[in-house]
Length: 490
Image (cartoon, rainbow, N blue to C red; front, side, top):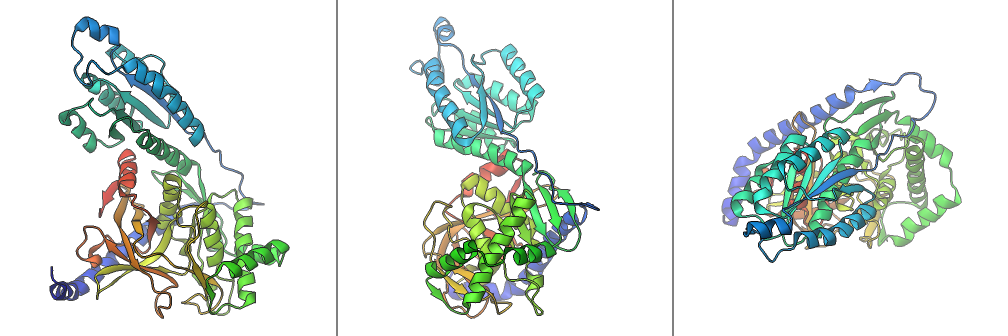
């Protein structure tokens, strides 16, 4: 499509598109609000919550193949063929699985004997049903036993990672796995990186089920559990942040962090030294709340206290520091993007940037912006992106980070939708530019060219989207497939 034709299309579609965007966003927000409102009010609590039990993720596994001696007697091997040594592969794979379990802090128990008969499969299925592990790991070493793996997945209903070395399955047997929810097939040559990804998915789901998300909002204490994911959302009065901020004071730790914010900034535009110090105090206040409430992540109704008279400082620098440590921090008490960031960090090992969505009609690029962002977008151990210290653009005061994303950076954009049937929108693309001194919008901003999308205004809409550095579309899609989350928009 030529540029002038594209612009006419954007202009003609703009009115209906904006209306659709409003309806989709309003519907999504209403669903999340209804969930939070349905939480149980915790009356008369004398103190913070007790810790949630954190369970070690457990996986049961098995090798599926016919013993070599049995095949010799039969005189015919079929795929993977007579040169494939299943016993040798089991001996080679077992220590790799053990190493993976230690590396991911999981419990992966592999059956010592291969499943080679219907009776052996039945015993394994009974064991799975009794123990109810978090996931299954099946190594399929024989084409004609594919039906055993299918039977295990169907009868147990447990999320399963099935790995078959390349040259084991023909297309007619591998393709149906692509349509099967609750399982992912790795049909590749001894790809333990893909097996590790699968185990991380199971670990992520277990972590989400045991996690507690602290919601600083309103005046009441209440709790609710996110359907499907199982994450507990514990809402506590936003006044707790004001109290914690007051109690922190100006300690040596606060002074050191304020100096780090100042010295690491590429430039300081509006904030005063007092603004930077108060931003550091905000971080320690948030950390205290997380510790007291045994929280794994938090979100906050942050905008309400920024207008005059100021009820609290912008928590945006504290959010940046939490993200850099691997703790998701959601703006405006928005549940869905906060869950997206929690999922993303556990699965990808990287924080996400939650932002307001828009688009540049002149270039047909997606545009996003917010007044906080992780500076360590590649993970806690990676080098930080440069940032500028600015005031909160909408409130006009305080100290927030303007993180500068590099042009050409591949990114993945996602949003988890809390619906009766959970959904996730997933897009990939690359950063085209960011504007260091853009007068409008929020401070951290970027433009993105989205793969396979002609019109950036036609994206699946949500009040806040989340981007992660890197192309993680297939990994997120596999996670969604494993856990029955409908993928939209990719």
